[in-house]
Length: 90
Image (tube, rainbow, N blue to C red; front, side, top):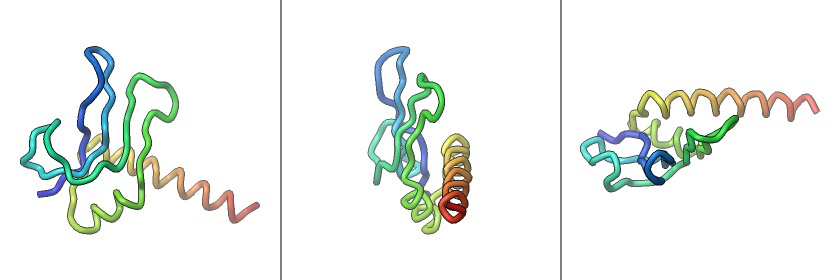
């Protein structure tokens, strides 16, 4: 099964994560198919980037997001909807 999940990087006590599409049997920091974003838990405010189009593509072909990545996707969809409404209103 293909999963959309976090891959850890960075230093000790200073993690930085990549949001990747990977085979579910691969280790957390092992091989991946595609990198679709990043996540830095140490920063305040918007601390992640996500290519929403690629995430939706992979979910469309059967990839299952982890709980954390699913929350990022949900937030990104909400922000994109607000931006679209604001653009139409302007």
